[in-house]
Length: 236
Image (cartoon, rainbow, N blue to C red; front, top):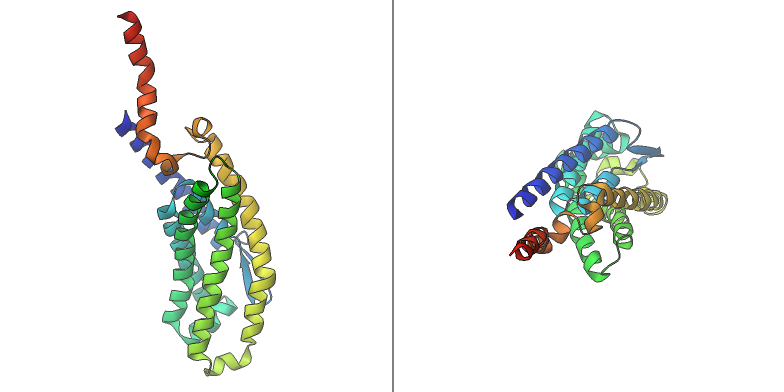
């Protein structure tokens, strides 16, 4: 019984991760994923990454975050103004700046979400709200931190002379982070809660789905077998 339950859980996680990965790709190359504001873009791709990190786990968050980063690099290569500017300065570091912060964001969102659940035991909604907010904040913190490091290394590069670097950073830290925070917090928390509620096992376990309640898998298996044991005892 325990082996069957774990296999079903793994297949379910793989299917959900695949759906979220398809959503990341769809959003990346359509207007659904980005809102152009001036020189930089506001991204909503933290939403499927946060959902995967919370509903499936940190490994899914890492995978989806990495995919998000790869699509960001592709966008830069395809002609995004900010991405083209960075590629002209250093293509390798641009790839690192696109991918590494998003991968870390996805993984750490899943890790911190587990901490939120243990910190506030019995609460099913607030950890998801905190997880959605965490994804947006980490995405901004890691990207801005990486961009500042990028600038400090190449601050004397001629291309930086035509842009207000600190103006870009201020824009990201104000309008961008506010919109990303609100949308990620609301949508990620709402969708994650719905998935936990309606996926198989969700109504029984609430927010305790998948690997969040892996520590109780054996107990659940025992509970399933318990009625059969009671019936046998009554027949005896």
